[in-house]
Amino acid sequence: MGIREWVVPRDKIFFDLFERQASVVMRAADELVKLVEDYRDVKTGVKQIESLEHEGDRLAHEIYEQLNITFITPLEPHEISHLASAMDDILDYIDGTTQMMYNYSITETDSHMRELAKLIQLSVSELTEAVQHIRSIKDPREIEGRCIEVNRLENLADDVLAHAIIDLFKTDDAITIIKLKDVYQYLEVATDKCEDAANVLSDIAIRHS
Image (cartoon, rainbow, N blue to C red):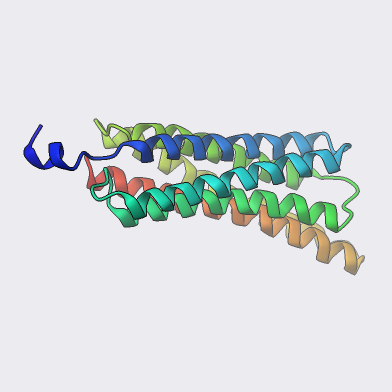
């Protein structure tokens, strides 16, 4: 260990916080899939996801606080803040979707919602694995592979959204069109946010390998 590291140790707490943050996002994605697949006790499902969103906010705030008081960080400060923000955005859109479904009095889910929710879940699973690898980047390809898969899943979500909109406009109920279009788009944006997080992780893997 060099004198610089001895005087000002590189604080590893950020990796613990990122792994906790990823775990919360994963739990929210799992709850989202559970809700759209069994759309009966909607209020309870929405409340559970809302609680996870609050937990995620606290973790993001803790990351920012640590960033403000840590002199030497294991990653560049902008990388830490961007990753924390990107992961928090995913959680915000998962929560926002379920709040919207509840507030819009959506009475049932459909195959498009279920497909999009599953793509979010799969994307977050890949991100969770990638986050675990940034603690010690021995081979950037381990992270890159996860990020490439998230990008592929986001492209699939684009296709699902396109088909959902096509099917939606075959109906003539304007109110239903407005409500469902908003829900579909919020779900798809969540996959965009997953891709944003994957891009941050990919950049970290390249820069620190």
